[in-house]
Length: 359
Image (cartoon, rainbow, N blue to C red; front, side, top):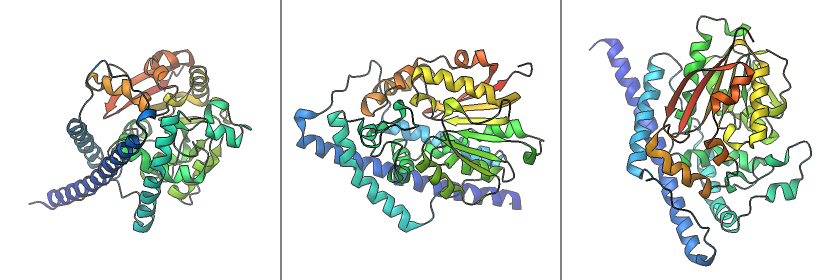
């Protein structure tokens, strides 16, 4: 066997072992969480939130895990092709991982209580709005602290990975493919990228891993989440953290070569969604690239349409139904942003826009 073949085989085995462990870890957490929620519901049967049955079938766990497997195969193929580095474990500190697991389960009863009571406004009531818009000050997903606490930032990645059976990171990494296409043959040191609504910075870390000399703005409205980004990414001269609103970006016109927004648009009210699209059109250079990663929409993968109906009923997602009906190409068209490619990746879709050269 040739050395290259041996290396490919070893790389594939390492990838498969790591991702299988991830999927098992987070799927196991999801199973345990659902058992906890069932016991809690049995104690409060009179207060169980009503869920309208979907009009279409919902994929079962076996189908979801098969599709996760397809996503992982695609992820490995992309890394093997050199579109981005092979992923490393995101958390190597076992004690921190276990502490996060314990905190996750400790928070489940509070999430269940908010869902039962419809309590989604605790953040605004306790913290006030200040410079933060009112729509932002909510307990999205019924999570403790909304986006506004260190505890929320620490638990967020665990919560999202459990929700998607360990596939969230692989879905995010699909945005690196259009980034690779946009940066091919260019001196990354002379460019500027921004991840808008960067959250805990996982995609910023992916960008840094693939393009260590690329200056990257990590922008989010939550100072706590920006701090978590700093922890994930570490010290880097090319990292520029910012606390700011996506609908009022503190950036000059036509200043970005590449911009991304990952799981932002389904969290925005319709009016703000349009403001953010206009801002992105303003700050991306003519010929520049914008990559939107967000939830599937009806018809993207018809077998998942029933799940899209149920999803906002199970979690506090006040603007999700509006996003499902949003015509994304039409949303960006007034700002000279043209769709180049649309792909799906498990529960996500990746839409690549290019700003017109004549804008």
